[in-house]
Length: 133
Length: 269
Image 1: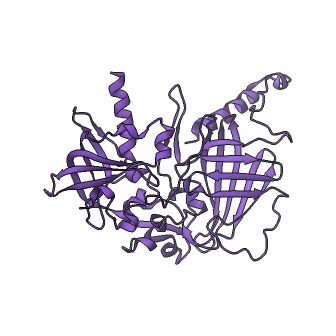
Image 2: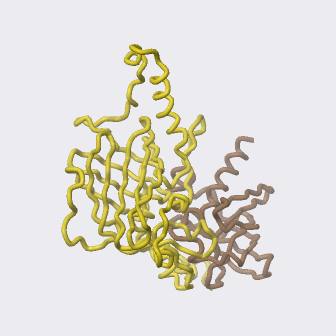
Image 3: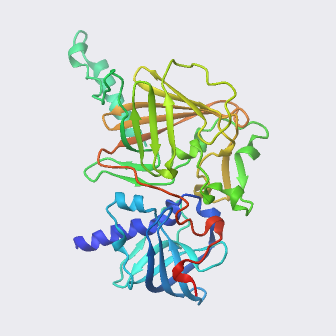
C-alpha cells in the first residue's frame, strides 16, 4: 500500500513536470492541439538539465505512428529535492505516456500522464497546463 | 495565499485592543521571534522556497513548484497604447515569443517567481541572492533609503538593484531593466499571449518576516510606459533549512530548443 502510494507520488511529480516546470513556456515549444498517447518500452533516460528526457519505443495510438518517442520532464534538481533519483524509470519498463507533440512534428513530446503496466494511472498536470484530455 | 499570515498578524492586534486598560503591557504579544543578524536586523540568510511554490502549512508541509504570474486583478489601469506593449500574441517565432526557450534569462520580474529554490546570504553591506534557476545571482548593496541609483545604468535582465532597511522590512529598489517578458503568463492564460514590461520599469520588493520561517514578499510595479499608476502584489517565501540549491545548466541538454528537436542518441537510426 505504502509502496504503491510512493510510486504514485513519484510518477506524479516526474510526469507533471514537462510543461509545469519547464524553463520556458509550454506554448513556445509544444503544440497543445496535437496530443500523443504512446505505449511502449523505456529505452533510454537522460537525467540532465534543463529537463530530464525519457524515451519510449512504441506506437502512438492516436496517429498509429511507431517510433522511439522522447518525452521531457522536470529538471534533475527539482526531482532530487523530492528524493527522486533516475532509478525511478528503468530501461525495459512498459509504460504509456500521454502528452503533446513538439512543434516540429518529430517524435518528441512534452509528457503529461504516465500509466504503468500494473494499471496505475496518474493524472499529472495542473489546471494551468495543457493537460491530456 | 498569505491569508494565514494576515491572521497571524491581525489576531494579536485584536487581543491587545480587547484587553482592559493598564493590562495591555502584560497582554501584548511578543514580536515574532525572527532570525536576527549580529547587527540586530532580521536575517534572511538561508535557502528559500520563493513565490514559485504553493506553500502548504501543516503536518505534511510541502512546497510544490507551480507556475505563478502577476494577477491582472492587481494591475493599475493600462495607458492608451499600453495594452499592445503589455500583451503580445504568439508569432510562431519562438525566439520572440519566449526567449527563455533558448536559455536566455527570465529577467528579474519572472525570475523571482520561478519554481526553483533560492539562497539568500546577508551581510551588513550586501544581500546576495543565488537563484537556482539559470544560476542567476544578485549582489544588492545595502545603504541609505531612497538613495539614487548609479547614473547611466545600462539596461540588463536583472537591472540595477539597491537595498535598504525600513525598520524590519528589507527594501530592494530596481531600475535599469531591459524590455523583457514580465512573467510566465503564456502558460496560464491559454490565449496565446505573453506579458512584457518596458525598459522604464521601476520595480520594488519589500520583504518582512511574518514568522520565523515565513516572509511576506510584496512587489510594486511602476511601469509608466504601460500603467497609469504603480500597483502591488503580495507573495510569500518559506525557509527550508534542509534544502540546498542545485546545479542548473540550461544548455546541457536543451532538446527541442525553440520547438525544433534534434534526435537523441537513442533516436538516431
